[in-house]
Length: 311
Ligand SMILES: NC(=O)c1ccc[n+]([C@@H]2O[C@H](COP(=O)([O-])OP(=O)(O)OC[C@H]3O[C@@H](n4cnc5c(N)ncnc54)[C@H](OP(=O)(O)O)[C@@H]3O)[C@@H](O)[C@H]2O)c1
Image (tube, rainbow, N blue to C red):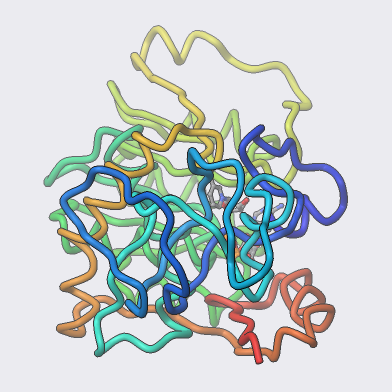
């Protein structure tokens, strides 16, 4: 998202900032009106969250008045001004850097598999881009929530090893093997119940070929492009009763995102504290080295979050 927004290719939702970045951790400096919520926050609280918009147009901080929409919603900043519905109390056991990298990917994984994908225990699931931060979260969630089998694709042996160490039943290298054939073998020709896809163009037909009857394909990214290149075999929609649905967290309204925040707090956070979930951190940068951070992100070699520390 940061890369495409920086390149001017990201359609920014109306409430979002032109300043990059959607997730953060930090201390509450000042409070405006508190939204009605089960959680209560006070000045000085340690929190983390997503920079979703709020109701107020302006906010006074010290002697300065900031306009909400113009500069205080992007997380690449010293201060963010956000709705209390989108923040979470940071447990002491979780570091600032880990907390800053949790919300977007874990909420996206939850949204894709549970809300859109209709995941429930005993279903099988395939996570493409298996070593992406969203899939690192998704593979672990699938395992803990009782998937019958968890499959992944990724672009290197190290990434495949990571997927398996997180709980994937099997994982295939999309550069050196035919994952569609491998999946067919692994499922005895049946296909998989849910596919979470970030690749788009290159995988659309192969996803349809690999989906079990009544299965779902959830598209949350278009890393290889937005348009299919060859003809699409529509008969599979009918024969296999496949449902294909896309989603983008950032364009969802505050109520929708708050529900996901609450699921994160209830189902995910305790498992970070007790060590069940592993949050992969690739590298921490000083925020003044943001260009180096973006170059690393563009390298496609990372296996986890890049976090920038505001100094
Ligand atoms: N819709 C939403 O609400 C939402 C929210 C957050 C993120 N996202 C999307 O989710 C995706 C993952 O985000 P992230 O931050 O977790 O990413 P990330 O950690 O940067 O990982 C992305 C990985 O995707 C793989 N990849 C890139 N191009 C590919 C291609 N053409 N074919 C196959 N694999 C490719 C690469 O691994 P390999 O070496 O395996 O190829 C790369 O390491 C992104 O597309 C992002 O925009 C969507």
